[in-house]
Image (cartoon, rainbow, N blue to C red):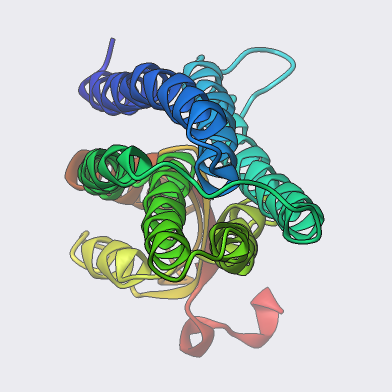
Length: 303
């Protein structure tokens, strides 16, 4: 296994560990919140538990997506299976949208249905939940940023949306108990719905861009061009096209060389440039080089 492959494998393992941790924590919180909500007559807490169940599903999807993404290229997938990672991120975003929509619909139903005041102890449950989910969201976000995974980043937002939902549920129950208005609890759940929907739409943009091979942001392109121009014999770079697949990048370069050079010499320069880029940028999976003569070296006989 190459150093680059080992690095990618380590990144995936970190992402999978963070996702499995999310599954375990969210499963425990979902059961606890739903039980406390049913016993304590709090729909906001039940809605929060449902949102945690969607977190269980999303974290499981992320773990599966990362596992598939690290599989090596084969005859059917010559560019590898990296697209499984942004697909997992899209699924997580869709889960956010579904959770937000379901909570909104059920909240409206509960607002129109008379019910008892929520139990005061549900506030203590929500405080614990907010703390746990906020810390989990920060941890997962850090892993996502470290390994540059859109799926893990989306998963962190799912955890954060759960913390926001719990925080609003805390406010709603507090108001309900203070003014003896049970529906305040349900209004709090309804207020959480647009936040969840917004995050779902927001988080879907990045993986969709990756699936559509949108040029990556950041300075990766500038670094590649700078490295290429240090190789002897390189007269310039006409084009540098980059697309992200999973955790690594595929690069198409148009290399300019002296038009008087032989095909063999141009080929040697191209290989040297490719090897230099791959050795200095471990995030690059492959570099495809197209050699062209530098414009000012063209003559009528070569046109």
